[in-house]
Length: 262
Image (cartoon, rainbow, N blue to C red; front, side, top):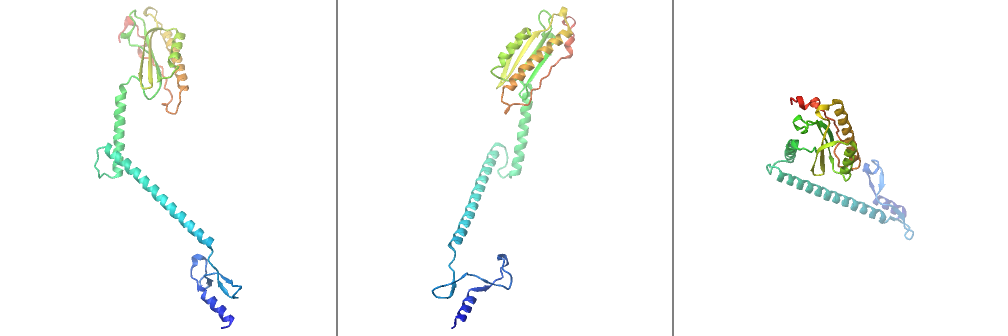
């Protein structure tokens, strides 16, 4: 057979009729499935050996894909195990059927948490120490709590988180006010502390409403400064909302023990 026939045979044996549009091959075009190279020794066209670099890259990409899928499956399995573990704990904390679905279980948990919070709020209403806010109060003591000599008494209180300088600042403030203290009380709940001071405003025979109001305002301003200093010296990350400071005067401000009708 002549060389032309050999070349034709090689070409027709190494080609195929391509229909794969995904590889960019048009319908009806002859495409070579293998690359042909000229063998210098034989003088013929022969198939080129496969490129080992391309083969290794495909294998490496496939291994990476399999590793990523395996890692994703493991992460999903651990996530589901954690969720199932938490749900099992919730089932043990609330009274529910073991066959209760997840949505119903979570709804029951939310309901019971709200009920517990409501009960806790109702129980804490009687606490003498506010837990949700800092406060300063200055108010007139009831008439029956007046001094033995008929003097008018006021009660001032400050409630906040305990700080190392709080008591020192309070002592200095009270010394500067030069109040005639009748009694002082301190109570605590956890890290919350409440200090109360009862002081004399004036004698019944020289009762002056305006003077008592001025004294109460001065006490309020002084204790507010102590509260501001205590608040700024603490870390606010776990703090309660901004202090709610209020000066309270009751309608009994003009109460006179000599004509007391309380």
